[in-house]
Image 1 (cartoon, rainbow over the protein chains, first blue to last red):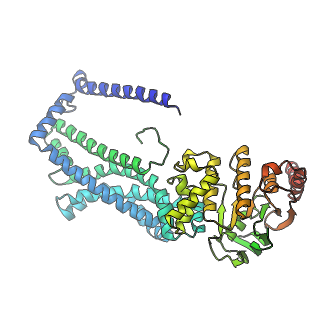
Image 2 (image 1 turned 120 degrees about the vertical axis):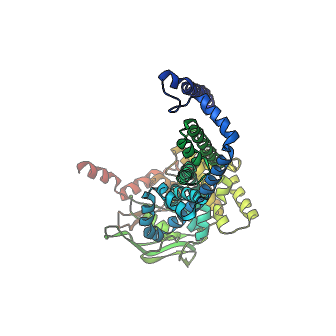
Image 3 (image 1 turned 60 degrees about the vertical axis):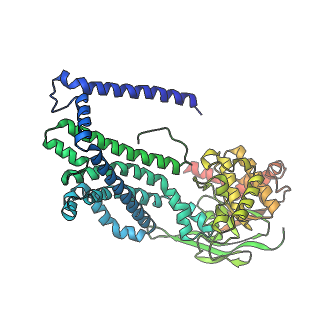
Length: 264
Length: 265
């Protein structure tokens, strides 16, 4: 093992990473005025920070963030469960896949966020249309990953289990299901970020709550700093969701050789 | 070795229909019998249907014609008397070595205590005990194959079907694994049908070698190996007769001629 080389990499990488952050923040703070960009186009860092404090105090920023986060979690969990369920069903039944794949493909090609106005017409200015958009957008990457994982299980492994007289259920629970977990988690990582997209679009289209609402409210007020704060909070929500998936993944897939940390 | 036939193929023919609709005969009219405790090798050119015979013997597919018997019973499907082992170790990456060895007996529903006892005894025999808690990715290719052997033996089959079990490991490891296999087969009195491309492996591990023709695969020769020490292939290698047997097998497989034909083509 090259533990020494690895720790050098980590140390150098961390220093460089922090340097990039400092440069970026400095450029944000002083860049706009140096380049003559007015604050309503790019508000400097300090102005965004003050807006953040103001929103905490008077705009119920944390309530809006909490609502968005709850919608993201609900959409992510339900969409992932549905996606995984259909992935397993279609993966195990070639007939079902053959019969349903044209419709699934059509639904996959249709831009999911375009359904947001429709869902709001159906369910009004509640949290449900936002969750539904997230479910729809989360569904596909999870389903596709599970489906292809089931399809690519080594047939010799299945034969091995069959030679031991395994039942269909045993083949699923002892081979197909565990074999599908690494691709399932790859799908969940993508899904965790997409869930935020779905929720925000839903909130932008209608309603008076959530960070998406603050985005459009800030836009209407020409309050650029408010828009920036909302974007940052959305990134935070998405980041926490992504990190949660990674932590669970590391627990569940502990048997895999440890990869070096990466963003993908 | 007794006269009881443990594994038998009677007039087995296997046809496949290719995607193009053309019918392909993999093996044709194969009859062979392996006695109780006997080790028989099957050699032949690539694609002569050796692996098809193995699938039929393990009950994973039914022959187009003919029948296979294990312990006098007709093979109708997978059964607990037969276990197979392939070139690929087929270890489950999410299971530890011990859990992998228990895979077969777990499916068969043995009580946990009995599963553990069997698996641990096998790990002990195959010098794997200290790796019981390791995951497959932490093991070398040779060790993984040894775990696969332990898993195959754990269900205590009377017949082992081995499809080039050591062809993917390096030459030195292969010799060690061959000896472990030979000792295990001898000690447990197991019957084995070994498919191999390695003529020396066939000679050093078997009581008999069957030679198959190119497709459609038929058995064209049978050579009895009258050498001592079937339980120790490394010692058997030193026997004076080994090279003669290997030479005879080369002749029967037309190995020299193949090269000439390839060069002139």
